[in-house]
Amino acid sequence: MQNLESLDLAWSAAKEWLSGLDERPVRAAASLESLRSRLGGPLQSTGAPSREVIEHLLQATKEGLHGSAGGRFFAWVIGGSLQSALAADWLTSAWDQNAALYACSPVASVIEEVAGRWILDLLDLPQDASFAFTTGCQLAHFTCLASARAAVLEKAGWNVNEDGLFGAPKIRVLTSEHRHGSIDRAVRFLGLGNKSIESVAADRNGRMESAALRAALHNAQQPTILVLSAADLNIAAFDPFEEIIPLAQQAGSWVHVDGAFGLFSRASGKFRHLTAGIEQADSWATDAHKWLNVPFDCGIAIVRDRAAHRNAMTISASYIAADSNARDQIDWNPEWSRRARGIPVYAALRELGREGVADLVERTSRHCLRLVTEIGKLPGAQMLWEPRLNQGLVRFLDQRPGATDGDHDRTTDRIVAAVNADGEAFFSTTTWRGLRAMRVSVVNWRTSDRDVERAIAAVKRALARTDSESETVTAD
Ligand SMILES: *Cc1c(COP(=O)(O)O)cnc(C)c1O
Image (cartoon, rainbow, N blue to C red; front, side):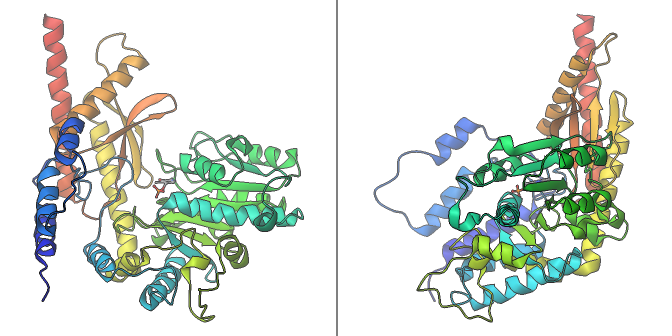
């Protein structure tokens, strides 16, 4: 047997890393300079045994990793890895299949075919829609919007896949003022330019105003793509799909949905109402690496019009032996050679089942509600947004008389920094309606009641500490 020492080393280090998540500080502590000096230096002319390479990696990365795989990391929308998904991901690397074509990897082709159908079933989207496992929601947007671009231009008598965009009718992209930045970037990648984006106003709950959309739709007869949101980053706001999608489609628009994490709320009966009508859209982009808890990276593009999707992505080259019956991912993906990232999705869905996904969504949302309401009740804290799903906002107030919003903003940033430095929990900040806030996002399957209690205690400590610090300052 070949010497597999470095794999054994990686395996024990991975086990140690995962089993230590509860005790180790959540934040990465190593500074930028120290990471650069430990990991940097010139490229060596001679190599090293693989074991030494892995030993070096383990030494040099010490304290440079965030504990985002653990249960007390609530920053951004990150998620962890289910055990089966992580194990399947390791096998995906070990098998080292090129998942572009059935001919390159029959297993990758069939597993992604099955996993994609399961996703359509789980999310209750059209069962004959096409799909692709992309690197993330960003490339899922790109894939869906490339299909949209071709379809709306075709209706205007223009073949963008053949003739490109020079001389083509201009496309408008209508979308919420609260959209994620990945929409703008996908629009840019597709040559539409960010000036083609028109922001549509949202109401107090972050939902697109249908009256504003109606007005925008009546403004011009140009080819139009409407991008809706199934949970925005700050408060998990869902646009009113039932009302808006038929309006846009009657006007001839293509409707795309950004459901990076929010689309998974459809797996739960409790939250089903949030996405009512979403199945009428033309395309949907989501992530498996967020709420489904597979390792990075994995997004999913879903398109109702299979032909539009295929025509936008497919390639024909003489050496591609097409087996007409099997799935070639190159027909649906924006990549050529690629990792079989659908394999961990397949494993996660097998581990959880339909009920397990529903439970994951409901459990993490319950944890978020508890975190935000209990932190919001601490002296010096204020709940800004009570979670309706898995995202909520808290603000910390400057207790001095006459303190301004700017003072509260600075206090909020300071408290969040103090909590993160403490190492017991990790949160991110955001600006919402002009105010700084601590954003609480819970999507990790590992988060437990105990984690929630530890995180609340950490915030309490940080508040007490800064309180006594400011008293010392005033006493001086
Ligand atoms: C995370 C996120 C994205 C981008 O997804 P990636 O997987 O990071 O490419 C887009 N939209 C929303 C709402 C998100 O939360």
